[in-house]
Image (cartoon, rainbow, N blue to C red; front, side, top):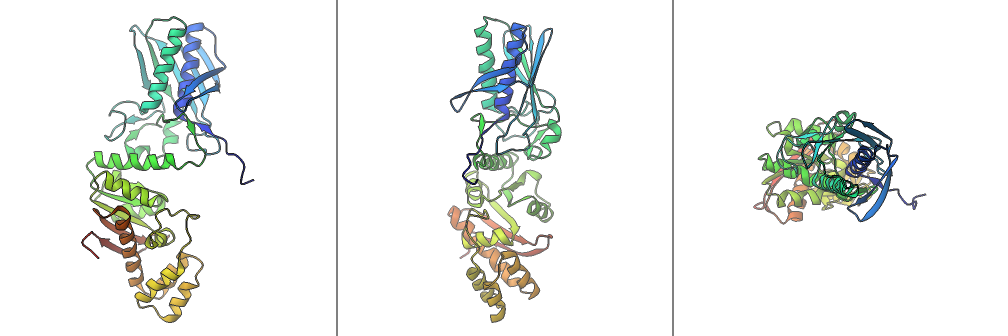
Length: 364
């Protein structure tokens, strides 16, 4: 079962393009369409089923259901609608309607004030519309409006608001397909978040491994704007390098025992399957922090990093957590080759601060 080939899905951009082709074809021919075949940027022709298609005088509307394949995201199952209408001009106009967000902050590939339709999907729709018009010998201007019913609600499950995309989802996709469990989309979202932070004037960002640690980080760094907080997931090394590349001055890492025990060891991809926690390493830190021989042995024989944290807390050994944070800072600086101020804060699952450390290049 584990070797089963995972099914690819399609991006919101591909779905919007297919809906646009169906709507425009229906508008020109007067015949509602049941499917639409488009060419994806990845170099492949794909036929999409059209959920519904209606013609209303000078406009036509078509809907395609977003299929995320075996890697469904927040937009999986969403209805992507394109409404195409005639205009008095000669150009092809493209805009977002209900459920498609508007850009309100700099740092994104779409200008402030415009609909959050990224460059590649925008190009796909414009070129497809131009092709259909020429195919039927039509020389008239059209207006394309993409809408996503319930898009504003769906967007609450994404990072759109953080990035300054308000009122709905983004129409995305650089290849047209969604590769199941691909890391590329997550990495791209990290890069975009750092770019937005930079564009809004942040030189200090806070990177966290998840939503819970981010919540604790926001309480700790109340002076920083929302754009400064970036969920890096398991991609610690990648995020640190991107922060340096984008010119950040200070990077604060906030997380918990499990993943930060790995960072302290120098592991920069902290997925549960990436590398085991080294309990001998944690035992050595416990020894340095003055733990008793019995406690050091308990750390060495522990089953989880969280259990080690509990043992050290019960013993009242706060120095252990400070030393662990220092190791995280050292590992981070080594990963990027210096040039940043690195801070580390370690929390319990319930939000108790266990320890902190700060290091720069000047620190040995």
